[in-house]
Length: 320
View 1 (tube, rainbow, N blue to C red):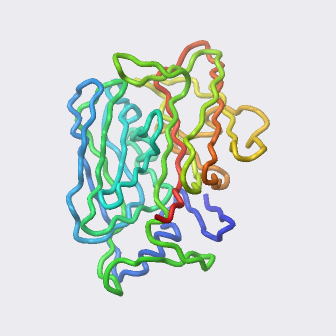
View 2 (view 1 turned 180 degrees about the horizontal axis):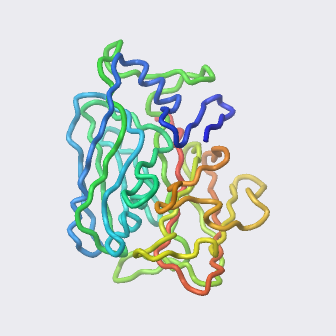
View 3 (view 1 turned 90 degrees about the horizontal axis):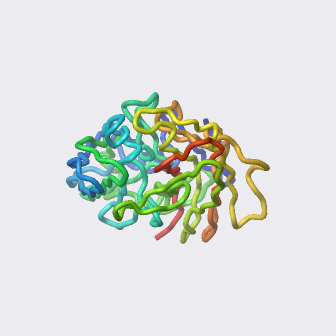
């Protein structure tokens, strides 16, 4: 799917093409080579575990375009659905997953799983990783345990810049000039239902027959939202009934709803077990600085759903 924003910048979801931002960066180099970077989770099977993996410094600038995960099992980490990840680069310290009640995102919102039809998930926007800058990964297991596993970043090495050093700015298709680093991946995860604590661990219960209204946190700059990922269409190897969970979405800063009624989950969001792990919107939506996205959820099923999360994915538009 390909669409155009008012700014004239084209967005491509599933094809092999780079985004205009990534292409503009790559054009500053004489050589571009495929890039794979595998990161271990270091998980040991301990309950409520946090583990940190930091990549080694690399000699070339790189563009990270997508991700693959190989972790967990049907009863252990749920093939990545119940393993959470926070990413930051150690140059800026900017977090990819927004701070909030959850403050991290399921690994399936970052990458495609080996157990899914789409083993590689593209990021909403390519991330420019300068040479010698390390990526920090914090893996967390909240409601289950997991042992081992890997994450693999997939992208492009950028070799031999035409001018000394990495580009400071690039030109977009509409003629505007933006600073490199202005566009970076943004993920905001919401736990569905009632928040509870189990032995000090944050959990959520999406109660049968109940309606809940929840919000993404307000941001300090505009966000370009591309898609939504769900982690709960299957749990512990068993299928749930996502058609019985209904959603409606609204921008609380605008006086209108996106839809007149609630829609079944598979029409609104993707899941790691489906061909579209993260369901793209018909058009990316620009959420203005300070606005919040309102998510209303109704579970019409006869049973509760535990530890269900959705992740809104997009691009942070901050010029730091």
